[in-house]
Image 1 (tube, rainbow, N blue to C red):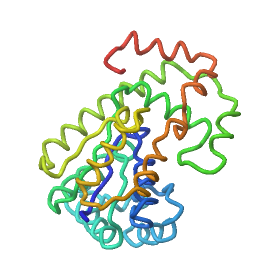
Image 2 (cartoon, rainbow, N blue to C red; image 1 turned 120 degrees about the vertical axis):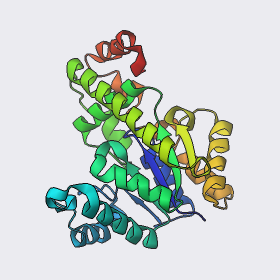
Image 3 (cartoon, rainbow, N blue to C red; image 1 turned 180 degrees about the vertical axis):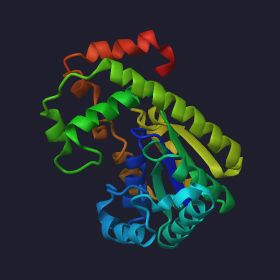
Length: 266
């Protein structure tokens, strides 16, 4: 099995893919968002908290004082990743939750150490931004037993369309920069890219084909149980922010019209 990272934009299926791999055959061997102070990875929270404190990631000393990320901050990020990959097979990283202080040394490390990069993207940036804005309302970022019932009964409030547009434009530009860095730095044989829309497809055969590509890429053996488990995480009902729920936002139609006015975002 190859060491790997799930690298992508927030709200692009990174959490469900990491959970599917972890619950399938890599139980406890995939850690989620280790660079965040409040990582959503409850299973590894205590380990991660101690490691972050050991490396002094918070608050400002990751930067190495006035030297910035170069060179001390870079070395610290690389050493931190060494420790993580000693313990885990895979990492999930949302680049839009971090800045270049983390992302630049991270990409350098991935290339240097021949880490397999599963790169998740969104065709529809506006939809990802809308999903993020709604998640900030209901505070659900990972799937739990009561998630569907709670979201189906959540009282959504209207969104600020101007703020939504500004966020979408910012994410659009961030994605362009990130994809350029990934493609420029990571060797082609170590990079596998998928769109969220191709993983969350109603076509079970299409989902299975994509997951087989992922398993081949990281050299994981799979069986019928694993295929059922990982596909379960990408059933349409597992989407936190389904269109049927989003449509209950009072100005939802106004939000969608932004895609007509700014077609590059959808």
